[in-house]
Image 1 (cartoon, rainbow, N blue to C red):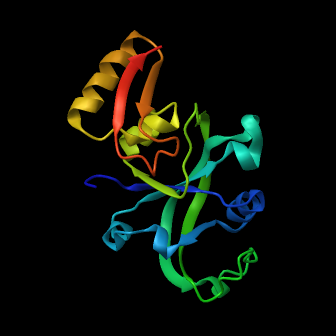
Image 2: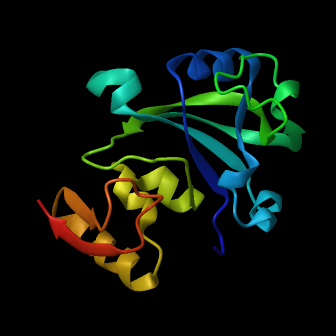
Image 3: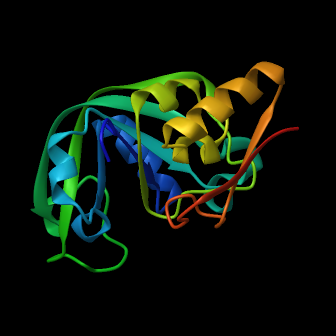
Amino acid sequence: MSGKNVLVGALSKADQLDAALKFGFYHTPLRNITDHKVLTRLEYVALYQSIRLFGAEGAGITWYGKIKDWKVVPRSAIREIPSSRGALDELYVRFEVESWVKRAEPIMPAGHGIYRILYTTDYMFNRAKEVSELRLETEEELREWREKRRAGKVRVALDREHVDLGSAVVGIEVE
C-alpha cells in the first residue's frame, strides 16, 4: 500500500458524475475501504466511468481532483444525490475535491474495469493509458512495463476483469 495516494472510485449511476462535478465531491460506502488508515494517505480521487453506464465513448478515467477534505457521514447526510438503495444509515466516506481536472487523455478500460475502488500511485496514474496498468505494483512489474512501453503499446493482463477484484498481474506484453 506504500505510496498509494490516489483513490479511483467507480460511479454507481450516470447522474453521480454530474453531481460530483457540480458539487465538487465523491462518495463511496465506508465498507468499500477495508483499510481505514489509507484515508489519511490519500491525496487525489479519480472517477471511473464504466462502459455499462457511459458507453464505449464515455468509459474510462477522465476526471480527477485533489482531496481538500474527507469525512465519514451517514448516507442521509449526502443530499446532493438521492440514495437509490435507501441505505440512509449506512456510513459513507465523502471526499471534498478542490477542483475537478479533466485528463488530456482518458485512461481507457481496454477490457478491464473497476468494480468499487482501486488505489494507485500518482506516478502510475499520471502515466497509465489503460486501467489495468494502475495495478502494477512491484519494482519488477514496473521495470518490465517501462521497458516494454518503450517498444510500443503495452497490454497488462490480470487475473480478473475488474482490476480492484483481481489479485495478480499475469502478464505484461507488447501488442
